[in-house]
Length: 220
Length: 220
Image 1 (cartoon, rainbow over the protein chains, first blue to last red):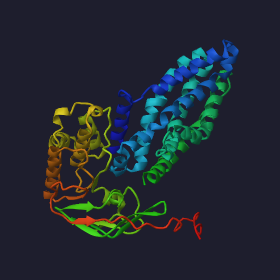
Image 2 (image 1 turned 135 degrees about the vertical axis):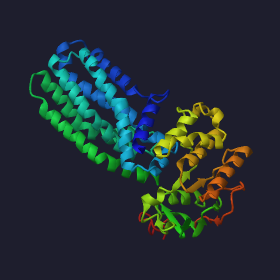
Image 3 (image 1 turned 90 degrees about the horizontal axis):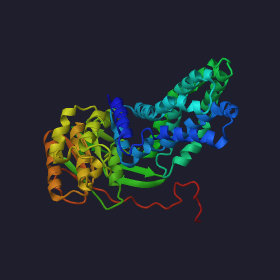
Image 4 (image 1 turned 90 degrees about the vertical axis):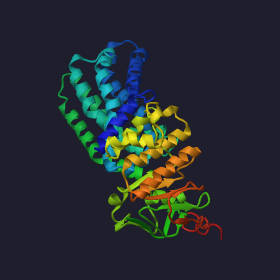
């Protein structure tokens, strides 16, 4: 199937030299590591900000790699062929967003618990951390795909993309950080997770159509 | 099979970008688009590939209309534009194989396509190391794996040497002999099969305020 071929191609490109796969993960590690150094070693303070720091860093790491999501294909002409391929453009958009999630979201989820140790996260909050990243990071890739499609023709569009997309990331980030915070003081954290899941599902429903429409306009 | 086009006009940003006469290219023929730079040859080819909308006019492939049965119509189109859609990180063979997968055509077509454009020797080389002419040949070899009956070619011989132009002309001849249709925008004679010559004149300049609500009456 055409969409799976596109997904595999994107994964392969990301992990080739110069593809930048796992770069977002490395950025995430660096950004989070800066916090204890910058804020100082007060364990209470670190524990209190841990959830927010992890989520803000995850969001920034995700933004970093989004601007090339469609732009690389736009610049070398591949996007024309993706549009002419048998798969509907909506599905191709979804395949590219999924590949982006696998190369940026998944590494974040894997390293997050290790980084949480450096932030003195409460022991009870690790499950909430993993769950909220697992549920929330797909929304980052999906919503980001809309922004990437809108700015595909803009030179140095990364900054504009960040300005467009960051406000839309707000619900995901707030709910994720809140779930971690509640878990760390032994409160029920299922409701923020459920709401976060709702945001992700809404993004899943809207993104293919919004991003495909934006790409069609930009290719004219 | 016959490709017929009405007189086609395309407007971009309120300006007439193309005003092409009507034409027809029958199976086995290779039509040639002629016209000075800026006449709209590329625009016409992109419009016929369904990549940008026509303001007036329509094209038909037998009884399929581009405006009415867009998906069905474009599923017969193979487009080779200015950009070769070559990924530098993938090898020559991987590039072609990924496009075959994307276009859902059998992978057995890859090796003959490489051979037809004399690419077998460099099939394992990363495409980033290829010269401009080799990249162009790789871009053109995609036409062979796409398995589609109408080839739209936008200045296909740019940066090709004489031997490669001959290889390309042969590929088009074989395609047309098998009942295919080709339509090429080109400035030089490249020994394509017989076909109609379509002369495109540059669209007549419109005054800036015509059709632009912000400039209406600005000069009076």
